Amino acid sequence: MRELPKHLPTVLPEHRLTLAMLVTGLLRSRDGRLTKIAEKVVYPHKKPSLVSRFERFVKSSWVTVTTLYAPLAAEILQAVATDEPIVLIIDSTKLGGCCLCLMVSVYYKKRALPIAWSCLKGKKGHSSQLVQLELLQQVEALLPTNSPVVLVGDGEFDGADLLSWLSTQSNWQFVCRTSASNLFWFQGKWLSLTEIVTELALAPTETAFLTDGPFIHSHPVDGLNILIGWHHTEQKHIFFVTNCTTAAEAQQWYEHRFTIETCFADLKSRGFSLDQSRIRTPERLERFILAAAFAYYLVIVLGIESIFSGVFRRLVRTDAFYHSLSQLGFIYLDDILNQGERFPDLPSLPNPHSVTHIVLPP
Picture (cartoon, rainbow, N blue to C red):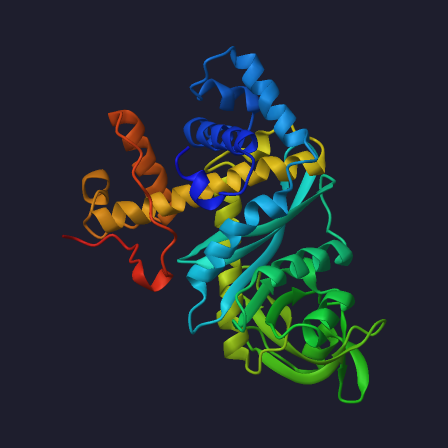
C-alpha cells in the first residue's frame, strides 16, 4: 500500500486506499473474484463489508480510469522513451463476464505493459474502428513529445478508417496483419492479396513486398505497403499492411506483437485470473482492470528489483535457467510473503537497457 501514493498523489485518499487493498488482494490471491481478493486483505471489519467496498469502487462513476492510470502510464512510456521507437501493441481478449477488453500495451524487455484499455460487451468478435481510434488517440496524448512510435496489431486492426488515421494524422509507423481477401491496387487493377500471390507465382516459403499502392477497394487508403510472408506452421502465405519502407523492418517490428499474449496470460490464467471475474458491465470491468494493471506493474518492478538486489540468486537456478520478469516478480513476491519480510521500497521502472533479465551463472 506504500507504493500507490508515489504514483497517485492527487487521488482522494478513500479511493486510493480501496485501490491499494484491491491491488494487495490481487497480488496475494491471484484470483479475479472479489470475494477471494477480500480474503487476502488485512481489514479490521467484516469481510463482506470489504467486498461491498470493492463493489462500490468498480461501480463508482467518480473513479475515472484514464485519470487514475495516466501518471503510471506516463511513467512507463517515459522509461521506454529512448533513441529507439516506442513499440505499442494493440489487441483484444475476453475478460470478466461476457466482455471484451481492447488494450494498448508498450513493449518492455519481452513483456507488454498496459497503457490504456477499453471494455465492451461481447463474448467474441472485433471492436469497432471508432473504439480503436478513441483508444489510440488517448494513448497519443500520453506519449512523450517527439518520441518515434511503432504500432503493431493483428487482423482486427486493418480497417480503412484506422489505417487512414495512422497514415495521415499520426507520425507513427505501423504493421498490422490483414485478410487475404482485401484488395490492393496492383499492376493497374484491384486484386485480392491471394490473387496477387498467384499473379507473382510465389512458391511456398517465398515472400514479397509491394510498395506505395492504394489498399481496400471500398475506402482506398493511399501510399501503403503490403508484406507477403510465409507461415511455416500453417504452411500458407500471410499478409501485413504497413508503412514501413522495407520487409525486414516490418518483420522486425511485428515480432513484438506476440508479447501482448504473455501480458494477457499474466493477467489471466498465469497470473491474476481476470477471466474468472464475474464483473459483467464493461465500465466496471475497466475499473477492475485498473487494479490489475497496477498489480502487474508491481510484479514487473519486483522482478527487476530481484535482479538489481541479487535476491534472484537464492530464488531460482542460475545455471543459465531463463525466467521472464513477471515470473521473477511472482517468485520474489511469494518469497516475501512466505518469509514474512517487509515489502521492499521499489524504484520507478528503469530504462529497459539497464535491465538484464536472462539469469546467468554467478
